[in-house]
Image 1: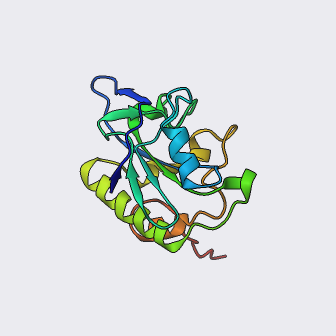
Image 2 (image 1 turned 120 degrees about the vertical axis):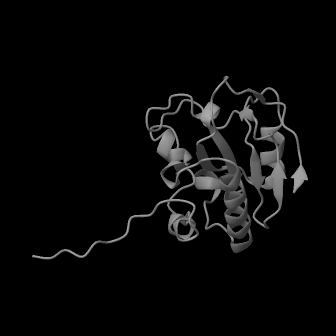
Length: 167
């Protein structure tokens, strides 16, 4: 893991527990552009972690701090998603710059990181979500090519299973 501190964070509110994990794509052309933006004090945006397409992992904000990744958002009664969550950015150009599937190396690092985070925090699989889940009117990431079923199979997230219907 490479430490790449972002100045864009603050304290979590007192007595606020980390009980969510929010997955994003960067929506930028490459990792360097994403790192620059997430570390730009004027951008006022960050994440706890960023994973490059080759699987390289960057830690940008300590998990004890409140990263600024979800913006105006809501999930299961929580209106300050940033205060309750860990944010992970996946390098991907997104829908604006040529959205593509998430590479194997990136997914393997993501699965390992998520398992590590879940071992430290009491996060239910129903609270492992995409940016589009918590801000559906504004965001579409990580998008339709993200393999949620793979995360569910790894015990990290939820994925609906078909139930046989009997007449």
